[in-house]
Length: 178
Image (cartoon, one colour):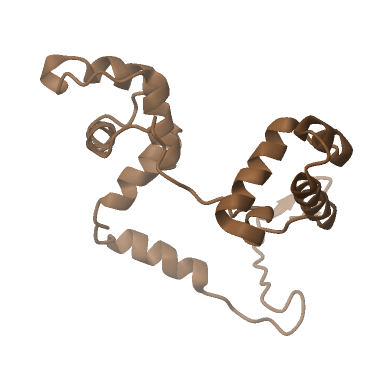
């Protein structure tokens, strides 16, 4: 992650002013145009990590404490596989029933699980189910249809492949030969 040069300069200035002990920490925060909370955070990080503590840290995904446990998440996905047309509200209420495991989970948590797996729309769930089933053999009609889409006849100029048939019907009074 990139630390802005101005922010880095302000942090170093705050450390230097704190070392001199001529100003209170509130005055240092005011001079450096940062909050007291941020000043204490910078000082604490500088004590622990030295110069490296002044730079911004990389944000990395960690364990989310409120995320649904993996076993419940699997149970929800298994249920969705059996009933893909159900929405989060219905999935939540159906999973509470004893015959479906008696899992108490809110509809918001169900929606979060579906969203994480890209299954938050019924169309996505149906597509997911189709991808899980093995592809059946194509019938002769389907093979013929695919082959006809690929066939192409090259014509050197427009009208080259055109043909016209004519047939004489007879003579009509007042019009002539048709």
